[in-house]
Each structure stands twice: as C-alpha cells, then as structure tokens.
Length: 624
Image (cartoon, rainbow, N blue to C red; front, side, top):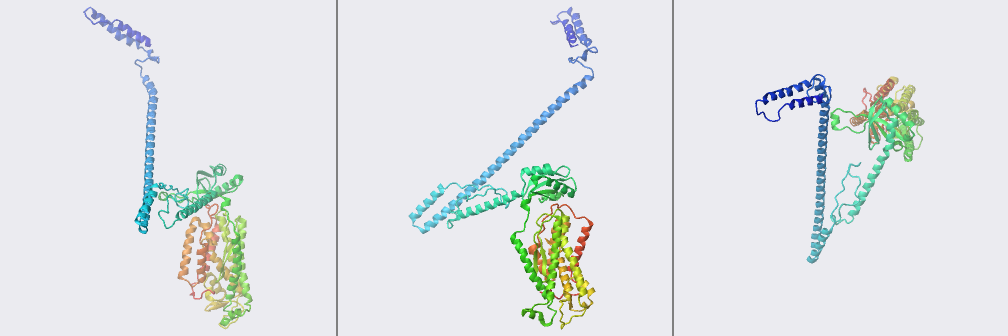
C-alpha cells in the first residue's frame, strides 16, 4: 500500500508543469494536473490499505492506543534513568561533603597537635630560662653567660616533642588502647630537683598498661569466640523459640538479643536441652534475664522497656568455689559460736540464784548449771537443723553451696549462718524453695520446743530469794516478741504482773531458735528472707532490701533498747547487704498458690516475732 501511495503521488505530480505558467494555454493543463495530484492520495487511502505495519500515513482510531502502549515504556525508562542519575549525583555530593568533614576534622586535629607541640616548646624554654637564672645567681657573669649559651643550644638542638597518643575508650574510663611506656617529653627539664621522674613515670605507665591488659584478658575469657557464637545461633536458637537479631560482646559476656517466641519457661527449657546436646558448647552457660545494658534517656522518654536477652558466659570463668582459707574460717566459726552459745546459756541462769552466786561460782572455777550445756546444745542443734534443710534442698535442686559460716553473738549465742550459693539456681522457684527450707523447718521446730518448754515450766512465782536449777528470764525479754510473749502469757498465767519467770530449758531453746530464724527471714541482701524476696519480686527485691535495711536502722536508732536488733543490723550492713547472684532464668516468676501462701506465712511469722509486745513497756535489755 505504501508503494501505491507513492506511485499515485508521483503520477499526480507528473502533470504539473516544471516551469512557471507563461500563457493562458497552459492554465487548463495545470488545473487538471492539480486535481489529479489531490485526488490520487485520497483514492489510495481506501479501507485495508493501512493494515501494513510499515505505513506511516493517516491511520484509523485504534492506531493511537498502539502508539501509547509503545511510548509509555520508553517514557518510564527515561524517567528511571533520570532518577538514577539524580540519586547518583546526590550520593556523590554526600560523599564529597563527608570527605570535606573528615578533612576538616583532620585539620583541627593537626592544629591541636601543633598547639600541644608549641606548649611543650614553651615549657622547655621556660625551664631553660629558670635554669639560666639559677646559674646566674650562683656563678660569675662569664660562667653564667656560658651556661646560658649551653642551655639555649640544648633547647635548640632538642628534638620536637611527640604529640600524646590519641586515646580510646577502655575499662578504666580512659581512652587508651596502648599506653605510652615513657614520657612524651623530657620531664627532668621541668622538674630539675627530681632526676628520677622519667623512670618513675615509665614505671607507673607500664604498671597501668599491665593492669589494662589483665582486665582485657579477663573480659575476653568471659566472652564467646566467633565459632561458638555461630554454633549457638545455628544449633541452640531458632525461629520457634528465640529469634536472634543482634549479638554484642560486653564485659559481662556475650549478649544474644532477640525476640521470645514462647513463654520464658518453655524457651529456657528448650534452649537448655539443645545446649546439653552440643559437645562443643559444653563449657557454656546461658542465662535468660533482662537486658543488662541500661536504657538511654531517649528510650526512657519514649516508653521503651528492657527486653529479654540470653547472656552466654564461660562456665569455668563464672563458677565459684570455696577456698581452703574460707573452709578454715567456717570451721573456726563453729568453735567460736560454741563458746558464745555456752556463754548465752550460762547468762540465762544469772537470776536463778540471788546476789550473783553464779558469777562467784564460775569465778571460783566450779562448774556451772548442768542445764546450761543442754541449752547450748539445743540452740546449736536448731541451727544445724536449719543448715541441714538447706543442704537437702540444694542437693534436690542441683544447687552447689559452700560450708556455712556461723555468726557468733554475745546476746543470743549466734545470729545464724552464712551459706554461699556457688552455682546459678535454675529459676526463681528453685531459689525460693532453697531459701525457705532452712527457716521453715527450724522455725516450726523452735515453736514446738518453745511450747513444750512452757508446758514443762513451773507455775510458781519467782521471788528475789528463790533458788532454782532452771533458768530465770525477765518477763520483758519474753515480751520483746509479740508472738512468743503472747504464747507465754497464755500458757503461764503467773507472768502477769511479775518481773521474772522460771522456764524449762526447752523454753529457752525454743525462744532463741524462733528469734534467730525470724531475724534471718528479714528481706535484706543475702539473708534467707532476701533470697525469698528476690525469688518473688525479681529486680524489685533490691528496692525492698534497701527499704528494709533503712527501716531496721531507724528502729535501732529510735528504739535502741534492743541490743539484738542493733548488733544484727551492723552484721547485715557489713556482710549481708549485697544482692544474691541471679538465677539462670530470671524471667520466670513464682506464681503457684502453694509458694505464695508459704511466703505469706513466713512473713507473718517474721513480723510477729520481731515486733514487741504492745501491752508492756520494754525496759529490760537482753542479757549480755
């Protein structure tokens, strides 16, 4: 069709004259040629002639849509090319700005170093000037001039002082990876009276560098290597239990941050079971706890909370053992506590004979009352029962503990024992069971022995002339405890209005044992009560411990007539105020009804045992 179109055009133009119309005879011929040239192209555009894809003339309406479909991709491609070019230009501009900033910082750093060098040069000049003046005062003029010339020559020939090494963040709070082993300039010139100052400075910097290296090595031992990290991410953690999003090497160990896919208990059990099956990870301990990294101010303002993380540490580096000196201290504490307990037992017989006959008897070397040995053995036996309950629970739960260290006391024989936990308890429920076992068993036994002793005690009133083989205690001593004093009032009606009361030795044993276990149930530090609080309240136990310690201190200051509380407060402040080690699964909470009920009973026993009897004013102090 295109050929026909062009032929028709050519045919029409053949009739046109090639020269201008000069005569009237050529006018009809020109008009006919013009008509043929106009009509032939129209005749060529009959239906069907435009079906050829090569035709470039007028087209029907559907040709516009085909043109649009072919044009849009070209326009989009051109737009994408322009966008890519624009993005590339922006990146190049950003890189140029960054290079300019780096060059600017380098220039500023060079200026600072130049200023430091200038300052050091001024210091050297000042030292030389001071030395010149000193020599001028002590020597003749000619010699002084020679010395000045020598000093100025030395200053001129002295090498330029090196700029201090840039420092980088380290454990001690400084910014230094490699500490300089010697002074950056001659310190002797600044301190002429101390010629050994350079040597001293070098020794100090060397010792500091060794300390830095030792701390860095200790931190590295706590952390996992890259192979262990990859193995943990591949074999221990997965999408269904704990999805790891980030790994960070910290001073505490290797922290795996991610998202919990199940409950903390299920996730921890699943991770621990997988960890045990990997022999290459046998020396690794995984702890599930809140992120130890503190939140920034922006995160706190935005309402973010610390997320659960797994802390991986080397088991050999965090495992604790009881050294031989500590074992000797534990054995020695038993010997010392035996004497203090016997002294407490003898003091309970001071009122059994008038005019201090017992003191005179002991001063003459005569044996004391036989029941004193019974009381001492009974008090030590209750403490042994307390520690045995801890030991049995520790074996059942797989918790490793050390030999308990008994704490002697001149007021009640002993304050209890300090039992170190050497391994991480599996979860907070295990810590609760271990901590409650000792005071629960010993407190129940103490109350039973106290009630039995009251039942066996004489009912006769005690007078100043009464001589009895049984211990005699002040009524105010029994009323120092609301619980124990109430029980005594019910079972011994003769106490009403009396100053002293005669008791069976079992009553003294039970009273002392109940008081000791109530003191150990205080929610403070590493006491049994502090461990129970940590198991129940988690991180909030630190606040509870501090509040309890403050309350105990204020009680001691305001009501200082109870020397037992006062001395026990001093013992806690110096030895037991620190928080207990965490459990392997800090996110598991104690929610079962049985443990919560036991905690309420223990707290009630502690409060009512340590609170004084309200009906009687406490005027009698503990016997010393």
